Length: 407
Image (cartoon, rainbow, N blue to C red):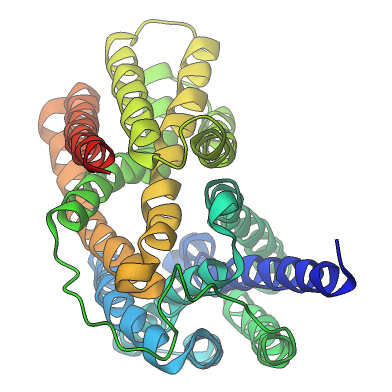
């Protein structure tokens, strides 16, 4: 290896780490609301409708914003979009910490939703320009864990701040940190040059000329939205499910739910690596196999109401593995693979944006199902969603096989 190649490798590794930490930093000014909410509810006394409107407006604007910001990142560059997004998120969080009325809080958290939507399409664009074709699966799988690590750290950090300084500090302290990180990112991104292979990807300055709405992309988006329904169940409803179905204490219910992201970390890294190592970068084979595994795990959860708590936790681990493996491949690795045709940021923004719009519908829908049919109804809904994702990934697999035969 030449000196120039070694320097380039270090440059790429540094930029990869910076992008990883940058997306994790976004979560400091995002999940702080969920930690502060119990204290806010006690002090302010607003109805649950207010908090529901706040969360719903964030998700809706976040989903739409990702579609918009994916295209902006292709045209203006990730550096400008990320820096502006972090500073806007810090500004809205700071004002939120001093807000006195429900109306002001809803407006500010909606603004934060748009600011947060600048993150994912932009960091995927950076990673797409750093990676060699041969390592996209492995690197993309590792990078896809950034939201799991970022969310874990954010929850711990916000909990520490709320317990010591009160809920308002949970919005002002993160604002300081992400402002500092925005300046760090702006300076470092300028020093560390990202490198892309012109033969494999379009220039960042070249406008996107092809239509993104091909049958493949439609299937990818539909499969991702279906998986988001399951992710909503694992992420939002898992503690309540364990608490009510198994009669576990809230402490043990949270421990049981925490096994899901641990399985997710394993699944994200494993799926990317195995698609590079054994399937010649044919991602749909792995996506199909893992969504099928997820369907079996969810069916087992539905049929295992009377099993031991430890067995249920094992199922939840494999559920996280089988969910986040294809989730990361659809939202991270496939946008990078398709980046040469549509632009990685554009693809990532479209997929994740529509996925979050699906989540906006899924959360209240599952709540309605639980109220009317109980937890059995919820597990049936999640299993059906997973089977839908499996069917769509099978269709993608068939399309990929036909292309291979033609070549």
